[in-house]
Image 1 (cartoon, rainbow, N blue to C red):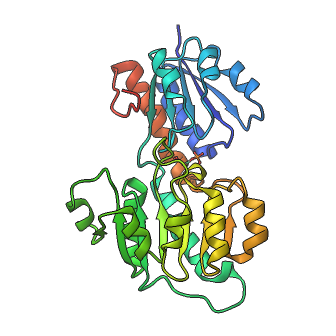
Image 2 (cartoon, rainbow, N blue to C red):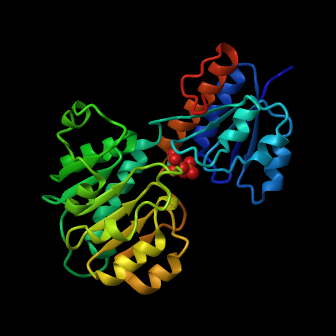
Image 3 (cartoon, protein in one colour):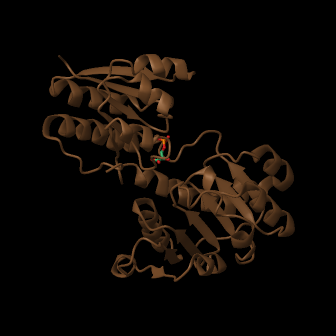
Length: 309
Ligand code: 3PG
């Protein structure tokens, strides 16, 4: 019987990426099904009923979705953060979950730098702005995205510092001319721009708030292209109320975004819909990697990018 692979994307991939995925899937002798721009979870529950493999973006793969997918063997999150997949539910059924690390990182890194320039130029409205050159850029977590932001920040003449509790090897930072700081507190204390690249986990949720923001230098900007869950939204609002020089820009609207917009005007900005990975290049890189990883798993048992080992 032919294996069936479903691409379920509430926020669809570029056509070029879908075409590439189709070719990989069909060349492997499998069948491709597409569920794009769906508006309710009932459509997803129905679509997964007979599939062997699933490719998603930020789509929520809940225990309910997994229970509805009787033949499911593998889920690939085409992207980095897999906080949208219920790993426990997948593991309980022996379903392999993977991400595609690095594949959409450049798109996110470019957006992070663009956000810094946008905020330092008054959100492209009249008035005197400031430059990035000579300022200190702090990178919170030096993974695939953080590293690219660091290198690009250096190219713009920024003084780049980083903190990552999971990278013990100082050579990783040295290779990019980036200074490794010893603590998260030190990182925020010195950063004119702080770019967040931490995943949303039990440890990080709500971890960026009042104290860290209050410790930042005069005129500092917090840039969030990571996840909204890592922010203590009430804490950030309180810090921005007490310090009229602080700015916050995010690719993932806060739960209290309307309140932030109302209170802080040009000192805040949120994209209308998460757009960090919204480039044709990132879609192709992540989408094709996801398809290739599924074929390599189903045919050869390759679990290299499994995140629920
Ligand atoms: C990621 O974790 O890869 C990014 O947040 C991209 O998410 P998206 O596929 O929903 O755009």
